[in-house]
Image (tube, rainbow, N blue to C red; front, side, top):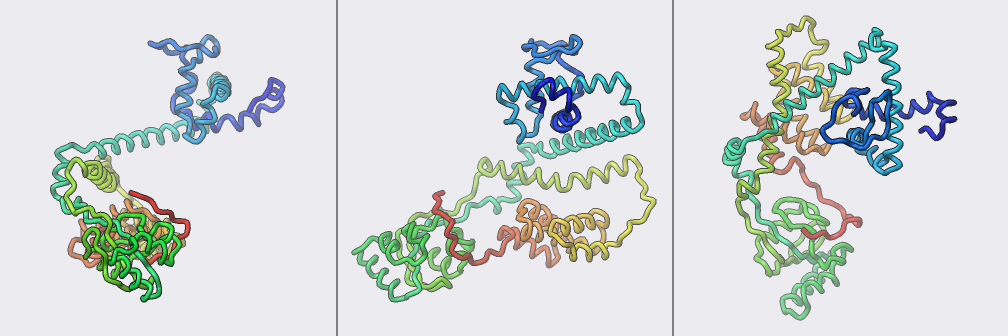
Length: 404
């Protein structure tokens, strides 16, 4: 950054080497168009002039808004805005000098400008298509909700307090004391639990328990779910055994199963429709454009579908694996490998990339395009169980009780 006139004079290349990337990253409009060039309905304080063209506070604020989010705070203070103003002046000087010397007419520069123009127009067109895909009418949303009502049910959930110990006699004795009401169950949980997190929480599990889903601090243990979902609120279970030892549990609170209303589900419904449109939209758009502009592929693809499938299986990273499977699906939409490739995209995104939304799109396409296949059944199972076969977790000492 320029510190003085001497620094500017002695090291201009080093200074501009630091300045220009920032300016170019922010430059969405056309350089050289300042407030002095275009009449403004709302006058703004003039901060600088170049050959009579004014640079105003509005110009600086507009440029600040165009900066990347991470860079914006650095230029938001009065000192930062002053630095940004100097950089705008420097950019304008360089732009005017380049224009005066007709650099834009030199073949290499003209090619770069045309490439940038094509990229900006391409992105602008895709952005417009994306906005249209996300424009979901109320009628469309309601129709989707009605067709998927079962997916918008809120299941029964429980708040559970549990006493866990590897010694059966200790647990049975504690249950007797709780049954006699000689000692509150909370106090017994604090005294006889062996897991530090359960001791600290008085046995209260940190989250609402959903049937068949993993439980914080305990993992996914069928015996636990069988015991607690048979209880009523305030009822104490019999002693039951899991891989963690012997247990007795009490349901403290319950949320009954119910159907989410359309208004409650609407954000999720609109999001799902938009995502499905987006996933199908680009291939369909490209197919339409290929027909419109009469595309003819004169060169055969370098690799067959089978070769691409093998390469994807041997890919060194999950991201590369997904990339190759997706390329196979795009290039060979009718090939017999497409079904397994789509399923592997969903499986890899879910299990290895933790991309639940991307996995959902791929798995839903398996179900839609190959409804009778065995992999469609597997896809339905993955979606119904959120795409994860939940393991039993070890104690996580870093976890802390959190109320919902």
